[in-house]
Image (cartoon, rainbow, N blue to C red; front, top):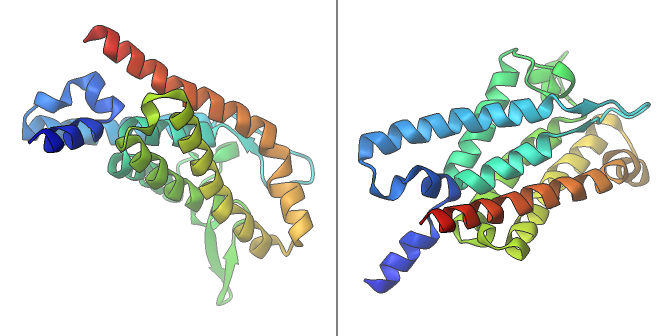
Length: 214
């Protein structure tokens, strides 16, 4: 019984704790989950509005990474992934939700003359889903409650984004390994470090507030 309670407590996400979800009924949880997923997708879309075009580089600097990691850490695996998937769906159907106000499936991939054409930034968008799953799961295991764990979770999530984004960029553009790193990684390292620190610090700080309220 004690072990079961411990597992239940550790799986409680920040969003659950803030909303008092542990004692809510089934219908309230379902409606609450839907609201959280929609809110999470809007946070990611708003973060995408922060965008800086780099001359000669198909990959812009954006705030999306911050939004994706923060939402996943706050909502957990399933709702974090659902939020990211909803965000992608909003952009795919034509709403200007992606960086630089872009939209459409072609940002990720399209078919032209029977040939698959990859979008240069499509891999990063796919990586957002992987990062959401990873960070969300780690948050459910309590990594987000202390600064070292939160920073580690955010760093791993960021690595997941690059693991999908960099090979995709190379395949889409024909860049060499060196060109891919120079254009798809190097310009973003400092900004990513700042976003990781901000997102990683926000979650433990919010848990501290929850503890004080209790």
